[in-house]
Length: 143
Ligand code: SF4
Image (cartoon, rainbow, N blue to C red; front, side, top):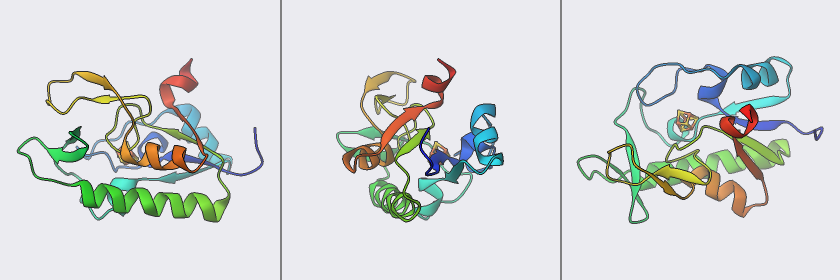
């Protein structure tokens, strides 16, 4: 494990930032934060979106709500702020929430709002990877 802190999805640490306002902590991530090994961050909140907020999915490269409202700009802004934080803290790895349109890594929902999965990354995960940060999901940690 590197000495630098791990960037983690804030919702995995038990912060109430999920789109539906509910909390879904993942104990291994909570433990990393408790021990000062991880830094929680929520790109959607830092992008200027409220909690709760309408769910979004990625469709044709854009981040949209079910009615088509385009939230790509907010998602990009939050991802860029997260990258800035990762750079400040020297993070080399991240543990992010599976299948989120921001945090998902390797798999997201397909833009039809039918819980159908598709290959791909959320905007935040994609940006971190493009800058050499290793991204895993909590499901990878659970093994
Ligand atoms: Fe969690 Fe990421 Fe969604 Fe924020 S954007 S609630 S950190 S999955």
